[in-house]
Amino acid sequence: MAISRAQMLKELLPGLNALFGLTYDTYENEDAEIYETESSDRSFEEEVKLTGFGQAPVKSEGSAITYDTAGESFSVRYNMETIAMGFAITEEAMEDNLYDSLSARYTKALARGMAYTKQVKSAVPLNNGLPSVATFNSGDGLALFSTAHPTAQGGTNQNTPTTQTDLNETSLEAAVITISAWVDERGLLIAARPRKLIVPANNMFVATRILESEGRPGTADNDINALRSNGTIPEGYRVNHFLTDTDSWYIITDVPNGMKHFDRVPLQTSMDGDFDTGNVRYKARARYAFGVSDPLGIFASEGG
Image (cartoon, rainbow, N blue to C red; front, side):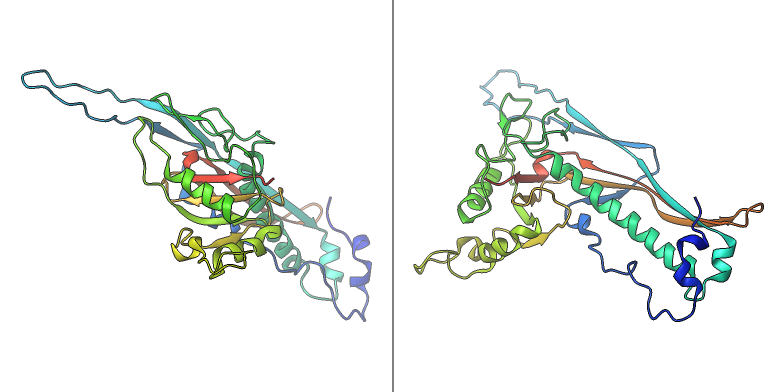
């Protein structure tokens, strides 16, 4: 349905001082703090985790060498979604509007809606991968945040606490220790390290105290803040305003091929006019996918 003069009666009359409601500042590109972005030229992208080799055995004198085998552990598919929206304005509404350009005003609102949608979608793996929700799975078939991601060797890795805990000095230190004990598919230790902390707005003051206080937060003694002194979270913290669990917290690690964003078609806008009605139509369109390849790229707790 096209926007007509009936929906903008005040804009047809002189004397208005201001038109407002479409020009608020927005939280933009918060997904860039979480995801590695790659371009795509296909309808889907697929990535496979390989198993590699285990520890090398001792070879006795004169004996044959031992040959190991390798293979594929699991695969992940990213299906490109098409996100699109548009609006139409009647010819008469454009002619009779007495103020700034209708098309310019509403195309900005359209772009804002498209950008907001992308941020909401980027938060879905984090929101729905938490243990209490568990509707977003990683390639191994388990919820993104699990205490039992299996390895080919028969062991497990956990990227969430056994008991969900609020963000504090103790829980963050425990998470860092857990990350340092991760192993690959054949049970070999990997040098995984935290990079940054991602928190909802409700946790930003807690994160500041934990990461930026010189002394231990919440204590009266003279102990140093080991997390700050050791540079344990080298990139600090970032706030994501699209996280739905208000006491959740997430650690982005340096494990490669973790959280992935594939950009198939960047945001495009176009317009055309209808010959019969005179209506002018505007649309915006983009194609992309958010997901995770290696669940060891992130650690999370949904809070206590």
